[in-house]
Length: 187
Image (cartoon, rainbow, N blue to C red; front, side, top):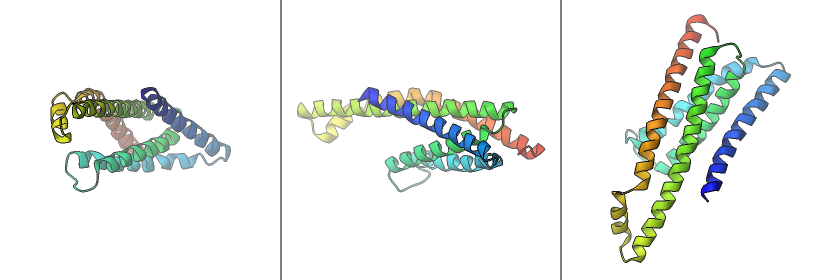
């Protein structure tokens, strides 16, 4: 199970890169590569919408299940990143957009790794909970006993220490890119 989740994450990333490369090829082949320029802002909108999960997680937004918000976050980020990859594939001579794209790819990789570790930790906690329940603890007592030593919390803390700075670097480079585009009309 552990191996298949990692393989699925890598496979999802490779599919995203392959689709982006294919779309870039099609845009160039049809000589409508200018469309790629407009996909960046749309991709950014998708990524910004994905932050609804963060707002829900921090209880700024109420209502709805965290599982659905997480799925929405993953889908919107994946689609947004795909559109941004197509957008950035059009510009071969600009360093800031490429640095922002590299930071975005690092962020995507970090997101896949976080999902992998989250799933692993959740499975391990579920197994530990079942063991405690077989020993006679009820569901609530088993969860309470595991909460203090939660692998999930420990793994996610370590992962956030990596994912959040990468997200911040991506955001900073993105803001710089947008400012340059607005100042110099290099869109």
